[in-house]
Image (cartoon, rainbow, N blue to C red; front, side, top):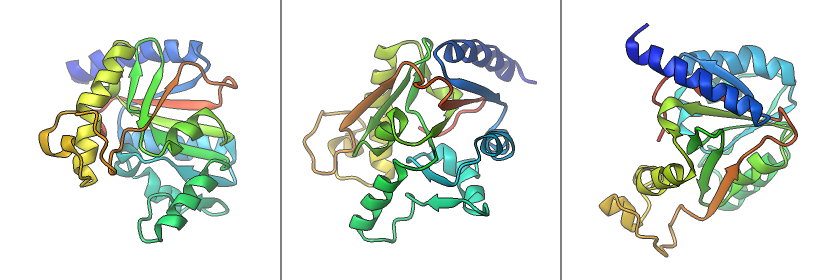
Length: 216
């Protein structure tokens, strides 16, 4: 194990204890592929969901987890990533996902105090993490760890939002300049904040900390 991996193993272990104290069910994985295997081989069999849906996450897709879940038998998968349906159908799938047995996503940031911090465009991911799905799994790369709420919100506004606007080819000032202008663009992706300090009920939210830099 490299010194960098060893350093982050220590950090992730410490953060796991904080998250556990906040009522989250916390796991640590050494890679995105190990995280996907953990979800598929351990967490999902324990939860036995009849329906699974997703909140937008490059980590979930890049780990291979999304593709593997779509192959599961006897599970209804509500595919919110599919861009082929009409906008009304895509919104309806997001509405349906709020009543799924299991919602899988990532977080924009997690603080040293064990808070999950997110900023959404439509709010479906924030809504699902707060209430609705019976269980939630949140995959978090080590690069998303921040010291406190101020650092987390700064990371999201100054880095995460501009990069995602560029990725989604949105017509926003930040997609051009790389700097948040607190715009009023109709294609703005920053609308709804969510700060999850505790898992309620206890254990409902599973957080998988991953010893890799993943997503934005």
